[in-house]
Image 1: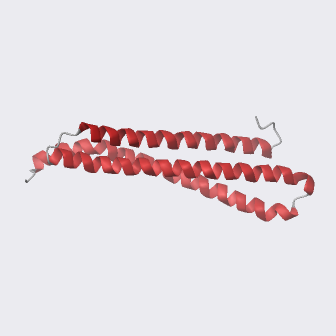
Image 2 (image 1 turned 90 degrees about the horizontal axis):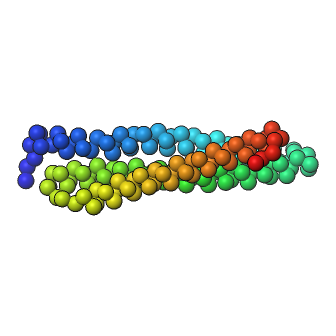
Image 3 (image 1 turned 90 degrees about the vertical axis):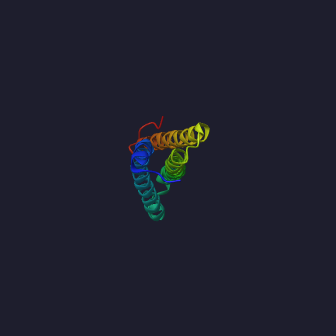
Length: 148
């Protein structure tokens, strides 16, 4: 079965939406990995400084390290689910192309892939919001405010 260019153009137009999603989530992943790098650098810095910190301030530093660990875990979760979102969107593009090219009417598969991509994105964003909250708690601890 051959596909003409005039038949291919609508297929490619339908696939543009998920491609834009891939691009946007790629930028989110970039931001998340940068944040993770900063968290890891801060944690390593605190661990190196720990022997020089007076005993009365060590509990604060230990709290900071625990918060950094939670933040790293949340960022890892966000990156994993954002990556799943990109993978689902990529499979969706391929599926859209093949279902249109071979005239396969399987709306369920397309719907499931789209829902999986959006569900993964939502999960990544929730983890990102939780990480932002942990970041604020750590900041308040740094400046001596109540951490609530």
